[in-house]
Amino acid sequence: MILKKSKLEKLMQMNFFTISGLSKAASIGTDTIVRAKRGQNISATTFKKLCEALHCKPKDLILFY
Image (tube, rainbow, N blue to C red):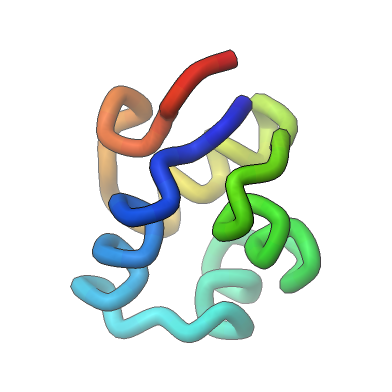
């Protein structure tokens, strides 16, 4: 899945997350968050963890499969 980069960054700011903070909150690696911010593909499991940590709905973040 590819995420909306601008929305990911906005949600991170709204929740006061740095990359390392989001990494801990979502239980995923920092490299994975960097890949997502670059618009690279991430797994469905990772996507779900990010949505939970950012308190958002999947439709808010997903660009396309």
